[in-house]
Amino acid sequence: MKIAYVTHDSLDIESGKITAICTASKSVYLEIIRSFNNADDKLFLCSDDYKEMELKDGIDWEGDVMEIDVGKKYLNELLKKSVEFMPDELRKQVYELERQTATALQDSIYMFDLPLIVSMDNDLKKTLKNYHFSVDSSIAYDPCAIIETDIKIHAECALKKAIGVSGLAAYLTPEEFNYIKDLVKEMDVPLLMIDYNVSGWKSYFDNCNVMYIDEDFIDWH
Image (cartoon, rainbow, N blue to C red; front, top):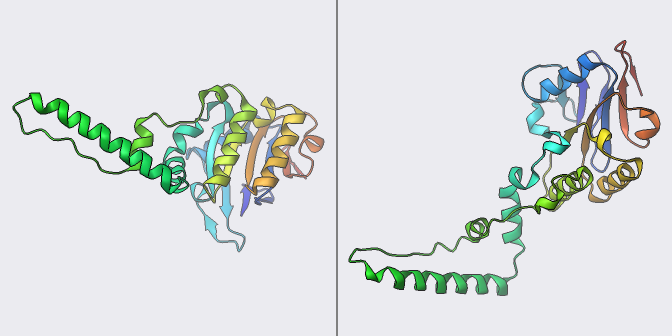
């Protein structure tokens, strides 16, 4: 895929690599963020063969990394993948436990002189959800752990869209960012970063597809 901010050069969004649009212009930054939130139209996305795409069709826009709730956003995908990888023997155990629970509940309602029944639907996704299946909340205030989990979810669940985040550079140390770069490469996941006024942007985004738009709206690569 290719992404472009209006009147500026395009950038390739590649699997296994970070793509970054960084700017020293507050107005540019806000226009980009608003475009992802359908409040502006200053960003353009297209396929490698230059067919126009909607932003939402190519990018899972997360916004500010500290506001991401990956467990909530990708719950259905995580449930589906967890059931898919569940061994047959474990499935049988879960079904048997559900059957025993349903039988016990049925016995408990016999005291009512009413036509009440308890039934099973053998839906493992629903069973997991009923047990409050979620991503561990301990990562909620750790930006590196949040984006790490996000990347791994996209890899494990074979989600084809790029991850799109804002403000990530402000939260990560250089060491953490190098770890994320390595993880993106290892997991073969595309990651798009939108950041404002990053000091030493050229060295920080080393080995990334990066464009810097300065205060005079000139872009640098």
